[in-house]
Length: 240
Image 1 (cartoon, rainbow, N blue to C red):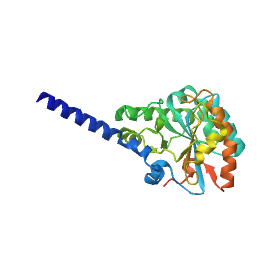
Image 2 (cartoon, rainbow, N blue to C red):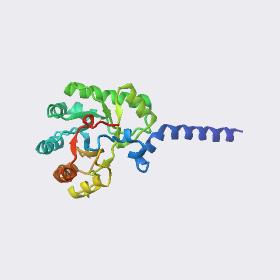
Image 3 (cartoon, helix red, strand yellow):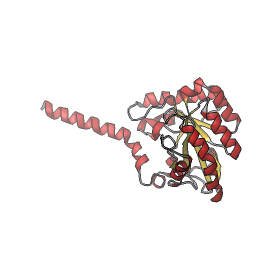
Image 4 (cartoon, helix red, strand yellow):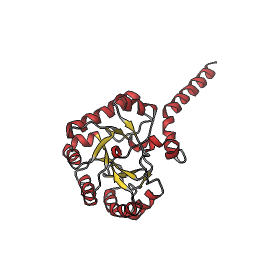
């Protein structure tokens, strides 16, 4: 009897854990952007939303900003709260340059093993750090790794944020990434009407990976210009 009860308890616990983590299945849907266009950041098919994760860094984020300035592009930066608190001037500079700042979390930690309360507090602290640094209230929330749980959506609701992932990523975090490989990987996803993911910091990437990201931007500009696509922030993207 005790063995039966233990087995039942384990089954229920496993089922509850699977249900809590079930939103992360959305990341794996083939193709996710068709199954969950709103979550994936699908918008105006003449436009590309350009986004960066994992900043701000006092070394790399200004370099990314400079490259974007040369191209006349604005982007959405999903920042970490602890790095924002450490480098508030970088976030202030992003906003002053016309970029959008969004929530990536207080630290770069996944969602599946964290409670709704912990995730809500994590997102709130990041929102507060952004507001104190730049005086803006963020709209968008992309959990680290794109890892989702029921708690992620609870955290978004509690902080009046909208969860968004991406339709195309450059895999610029890899140690063997090159500017050309970044653009090739982006083209394997959805660009027209899509949301592009790159990184402006190497806090979870190969050391110095951001230099490859910066070098990839002029190549990406050539491809997008040839396709007649405009580039901008998520809030300019008319996400469905």
